[in-house]
Image 1 (cartoon, rainbow, N blue to C red):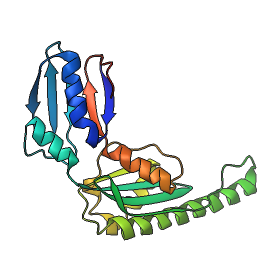
Image 2: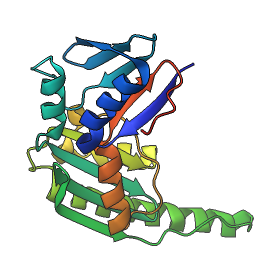
Image 3: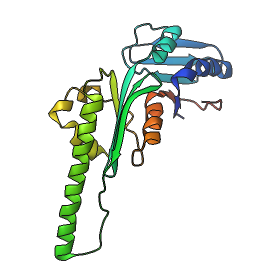
Length: 209
């Protein structure tokens, strides 16, 4: 049985110690993109390395790597709002959120339905244009190491199609975040979620994550 847990970078060292306490002596098999921790009782934890590659393949090197002040961008776009932020480690150093009104669905038919659909499409286009301008202003020149996106996938794809953002596309990494309409607190939480270390456990582990 396997499951995925997420751990804040600041808690990874403690989590690894707890894993050993619960499952017995551990061995580390480290690679630049992931670290596999195998315990005496057969439990295995595969730690995905953020901001690859990992240079120091020891446990201490892994902990130091995740605690370094990496520059992470977060881009959130939905029809009703957008947000972009730059995190240096856990600190949000630059950000902007905004909203645009996009009408919901209607039960009207015929010409009214078509007119409503055109208006809604125009509103969505304006919202995505506004999101693009914010992404250019906040993210394009931010010297990011990685970019995590969230909200609506089609909206994100539309924003990243802008030629001014082409340098960001290779930086996009998982996870894709499911978020409500972006507000400041939503953006801040998205940054915390984006920074979290992802660990796949291949055996039940009832200790704290």
